[in-house]
Image 1 (cartoon, rainbow over the protein chains, first blue to last red):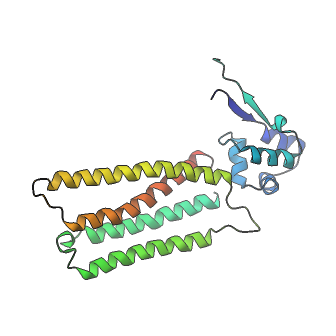
Image 2: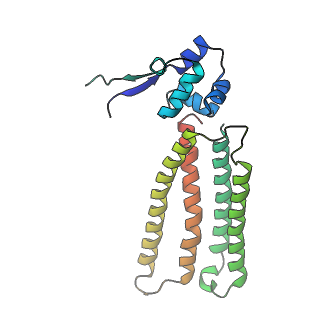
Image 3: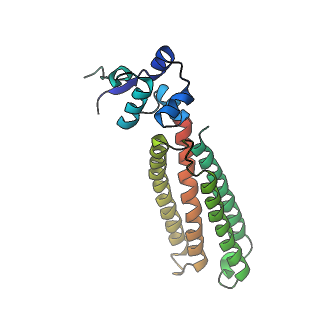
Length: 73
Length: 145
């Protein structure tokens, strides 16, 4: 599959809210380690978790995630 | 470190200990030759595995899901699936290697001591448990603990 999922969770969490990773995890119903892995772009969330995180941060989904197209295509 | 990673590490330690004790019982003295007659060692090995599965049950209870706190989520499930797939391949390779080694060694005599089949059966349990949890720990470390 071409492309890579890029996310702005860390920027939005820090810039638009005062939430810590643990608080965001609690609101989204996941573990703090999952938020950490997401912010380090080591894990791609399911659509359900992505929507929950977007709701927890109160931003639209496409503001949090974007598909980065491969350069060679 | 996540609860599930802690669980995996403790599970790995538990089954590594069982495996070490099992090897020290099975591969010392004349166990292989006298397996069928040596009631004590047979019972000790059985007790060792009961202790292993008992420890497993205790760990599952300690690290069980809690209502008030999220201790496991979709990333844990994803890592577990990856670890199971990789552990499955290692387990199959282990069985293949042990079986082919026994075949090569006893090909001329035409008979394999039954103790080796018990060895394969018991060690398989340890190897499968260790392989899956070792891969879990590896994937947790790789994927941000």
